[in-house]
Length: 92
Image 1 (cartoon, one colour):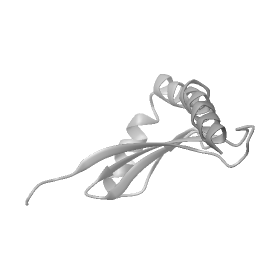
Image 2: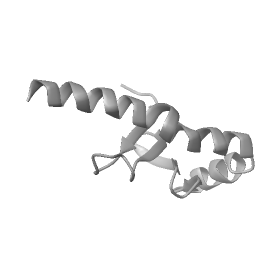
Image 3: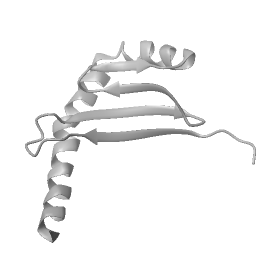
């Protein structure tokens, strides 16, 4: 089948039980190649392809966007990790 496949993937990555190392990642991919990624630790988008570099440069000009994405560590990642972790612990 011919066509194109474009998608975003959001991940919350952590390894400590107090979530102090929580990182919010938002990856933008095209045909299974990551073009650009936001990393809350870095605080900006990084481009990995020629097109992704252009996207990252443009998105990084929007301070409101970057602040909102950084805030997702506390607004999205930690609350969901707490719910999921407690559900797993309750079944152990």
